[in-house]
Image (cartoon, rainbow, N blue to C red; front, side, top):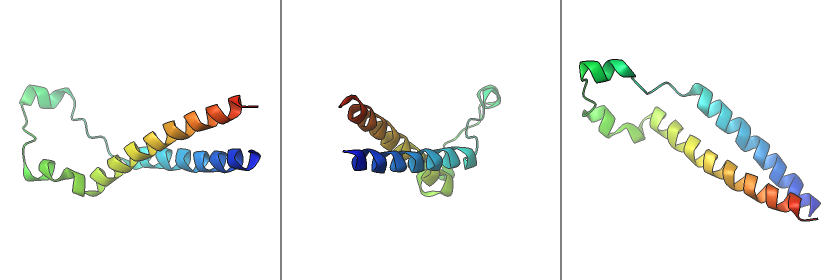
Length: 83
């Protein structure tokens, strides 16, 4: 059981580092209040195909790694409550 805990902890730290790095290199997407006032439209070709861009892929991987992080946290919590 100790081997499984050790492997999960190593994977957990790798996922933590990856999610921190991905979150730091992402650009800010929210235009803020100024787009609400000016009424700028986001209905263009770039917005429709944004998932295929570098930023879209980074966002997708950040979400995937976040889900993996939650699953690993639950698994490690369950393993450490078992004596």
